Amino acid sequence: MEIPEKMHAMVMEKPGFHLVDTILPVPRPNPDQVLVQINACGVCRTDLHIFDGELTHPKLQLVLGHEIAGKVVQVGEHVANFRVGERVGVPWLGYTDGTCAYCRRGQENLCDHPEFTGYTLNGGYAEYTVADHRYCFPLPPSYTDTEVAPLLCAGLIGYRTYRLAGENIERVGIYGFGAAAHIIAQVAVYQGKQVYAFTRPGDTATQEFARRLGAVWAGGSDDMPPVLLDAALVFAPVGPLMVSALRATAKGGIVVSGGIHMSDIPAFPYDLLWEERALKSVANLTRQDAIEFLEIAPRVPVKTAIETFPLDQANEALTRLKNGKIEGAGVLVISS
Image (cartoon, rainbow, N blue to C red; front, top):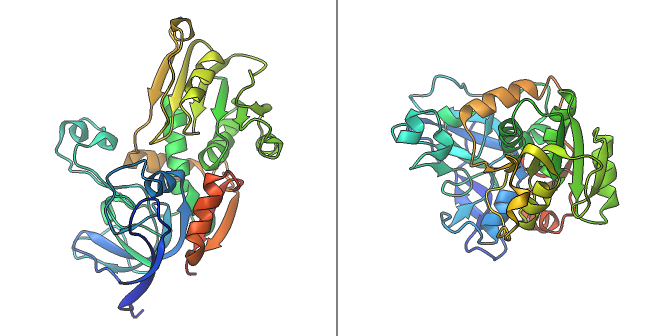
């Protein structure tokens, strides 16, 4: 195909200000990159944290978006794992140095010199993007691009959060039942876990949504579950929920925060942590997380609940996400 010289992109010129519909040059791949024609890009809560200025070191001007599904249209000379015409997914982790202590011991998610798609690298709120081929993934053929886009961050971070809760759990609570939660709840149910869903108080529609996905109980985040939990996953960026989750967790249980940003966690009595309860956070993801999750998702099969928006309505999508008005995940549909 003939690659155009220019493209539409929704550009963040400054945090806190509406994205601007801008004409940019189509980027050209370096030897280690692929050029991707973007068909769909998920609208992630991390995008919202960047947009609101809560993540403080974005590239400016910036094209947001790190749940990218599209088609390879050009490859750099070092690229051997993708060919022109193949479907490809581009996630949050865009580059690691491979040499720091964390990378050497298999913790590339903690790399000292990382790059992140849609934060320090231009992302998917555009018609085209370039990405390092080593951090891209083939997409399961059973999903359309709009269906698969949320799996590339909400799914991957959700999976890492769930996996860090441990294998020997039966009762798992999920606080903040949005994009990541609705995906990982399906995996947990598939694996025979009992899922307890916590939503904004009074949000009966989302509670019913959780039950439809297999939750055995759903209530407000200010409620106690009918039984104590073995583990709790906190996806809402609300610090006091970490304390609520501890309160709902049994002896030896773990509370895992899956967010990249969270409001301050208030002081709490030591009794809530005693009896070998644990608090843990998740940072970013590894390529192995993506390989594992994109293999298990079609087997469940994970079904993503999505609300679609055209590219030029990216601001509306972010607003609806911020106000909790999207059931499941928002996705920008860019081309097909």
